[in-house]
Length: 518
Image (cartoon, rainbow, N blue to C red; front, side, top):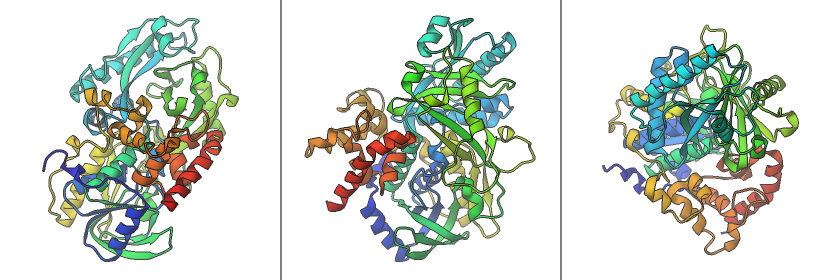
């Protein structure tokens, strides 16, 4: 096999392909690996397995990136927080996986992002020294991971003028400069999941959304098509539970302790042209920070909380009032003009699938992942974080191959670019607007090409929103979008702001109606 031979198959996901592959599955095709869950971990497992030559099927009861994978900070980070907690192994692993993502796997979706800690009077000499030491340790992690400084520059101290250029709304009084370090940022976490799913499909995997698992064992599962109500039973040599915070619903022997991470959404104007991750230490903590960072669609996201979230797991977690107050209070300590609830355009919260331990705080639970085996052979992958999804998937497929005695090639995903991956001079030559190249990479021109026959496809889906009708059409024909929520809430992130969602809904409905009449 050549490095890119995995892309020889068709990567387009759509309703017609879903129907064909569901029918083929019902005919009793032999399956090597059945993956339950369509988040970043599940799609990563499906890609790893399919790229090794295993007959792979992924099922997801909702949509790709429906759960935690769309509620992240959209950061691909090197694990400084874990290093501060003494977790050297996962810090190094994070730095290695960050390098793979930014250089090989998804250079079109990940960009370098500076983070700025402003040196304000509240940040004393001792705490600023700790931050500086942490950033220097991050430099060591980056070098140890083989990521060059030309891609992620070295940390440094900057003057007050440079700090204000990066974060114009920072308080000027008492500002004595800032500390900067560099990390990775995804243009969007859900887009990474879709790219993984499509690359898995190109490698031969069946990716089936709106298919729920009603029962599962280590060698079979009963599936229900939620669109038609039809059920079928499939047998697989290995069954992988990659359902995140819902993992204990598939395997009740697992005990999870979910942690809720909350973010607030602002217009970019509220932060005056922010071009870095404005990072503010949480008072009383040496390893926790609140950060505001520029995001897609002219927005800024502010996060992050880490709160215990016991009880039933909702499909869409909601921030609490206390979390909103915490985020505003912490960031306002660094701003000239405080933000208020009136400035908030939207919010979101995600639940981390942490394994239950004896620690008192979820903030102290290790973010290491675990591959677990139930007595009947079901394999579950839990823990971890978005940045390390690839290594999580590799360990999971290794376990499946060993457990089921599968004949498979070695893991290939360290050197396997995802659909759309492009960088350097080739990226610069793409004949499409930069905003499309950031979202679609090498496929940006093809997305744009849909307007050749219908120039109206170049129009925005609503006034003031930087998403075109062509992107909705592409999401339906190539990215597996089946309804308006798929288009508004996951293929794009328009839905994070309720008023924008309302404005763009008619265009989403029209795009789906046009697809049905084609």
